[in-house]
Length: 364
Ligand code: G6P
Image (cartoon, rainbow, N blue to C red; front, side, top):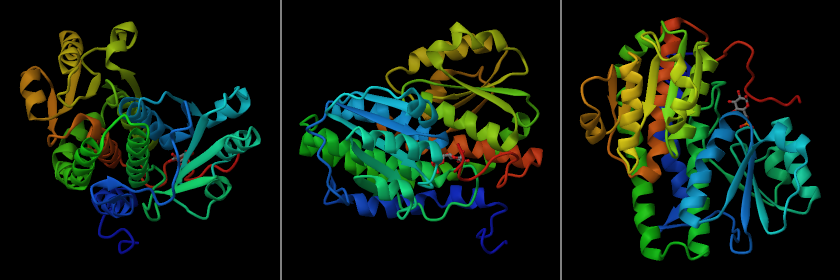
């Protein structure tokens, strides 16, 4: 009903707009005195690697976190899709921590992968939204994401809070392993605390994104590009768009454009580029030029400096607030979600209950 949707047209819109508040709630339980405090302790010093396993959007959260664990804690991370991991039965070396990420905590493939690791006597951590779920109960340590009930089949606020908890784990691992000092941790935590406000600013772009989405709704294919931690965010944008608007979308690492997808570029192809102006931005500008030279329609999502540098040939822009590149996924998720949402609304599809999809997949 309208009341349950908090005045929004869909649960998905309500959940997208709840993100600043539910993220702030989550951070309250993971931050105190300018440091990360985990609700339950875990020692990252005795391990040499992390394996992360999940399905769907939760899997994409893992692929973002890989950049954080590697960059901040210098810990190698492997990320796997649960249905691949469990049937491949991979060898697992000792001194490995395994992390299972799941909104519902009941996804059959993720649970089976967890049980496989438990059988191999690995430390099993989980990041879940439903604390009484099977995945939470069967883990050695479970970290709640505090996103509240999520109704929309396409996961939004749970994804953002999964990222927040994974960032908290990465900062903790970095501190324990001596990869960052207390001053750097305080600086990171200070920036982390600003993220809900930045998400709120990004939500203010909803009307502009809705206008742009009118055009996207007429496309038959859309390409999403990103580099570094924006590469998994390109996957999230493409996944959301496919799920709820039924428009075919594909994500590519910007640097891989010339190895295939550039063959698809023509006047009718929108190319969404997620690119805060970071150290690799110049490279992304040349990728965009390759698209524009072939008349592809570039939609650049960047900050003011990035948009200025990109020049006037882009089809459209979404100007994001400035954010430290390490936290950018937590803010750039908003335009990814809103592009999918508004495109679906313009197409008139069933946003909250997309065809053929289920909120929680408990069959194999
Ligand atoms: C389904 C849902 C997705 C979700 C995935 C994993 O496909 O539609 O939104 O990301 O399952 O679910 P989980 O509950 O394990 O995060």
